[in-house]
Image (cartoon, rainbow, N blue to C red):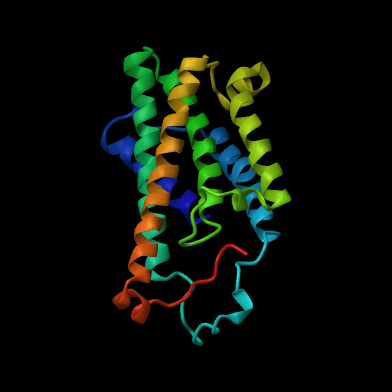
Length: 216
């Protein structure tokens, strides 16, 4: 997902500019874990996702037109910024509320995985809400979401992951903090989709809107 690239760039840049976690919000093993263990399964699951309703009835894109439309770029940028703010905030919460940068990084690392679960669900459709039972109509996505949620818990609770990834154990209260950025991302992303649908349903929006291919 393009969102992941944006988050990594903005997170490390923000950590450096604001001197958060000495400019290293995540360790190299954690970065690799996010790329290959968290993000890759979602890419696989989305590849087997159901096609968007009415996909075959849509007019093909003009030759040479980029898939990265203005709407997609805005969505990716805003989603990446929202996740970044959440992650850096969690590191600060760990440092100032719990007295440990390592705890903050572990909370942020957990929150990162949870945020990518939300991003994978939301990116299935450019304007369709994720707050519907249709979100769970893909067996591959369901297994991916369940597996990544379990791993998001285990990476801070099992000694083997603590040693491998440089995380530390967090308690239920701290895990609750990790949930906040993911839930905020879900709410904000769906709100943005609602605004987009309203604009497309308006007379001026219908005249200028170009149908987009969903996550199928």
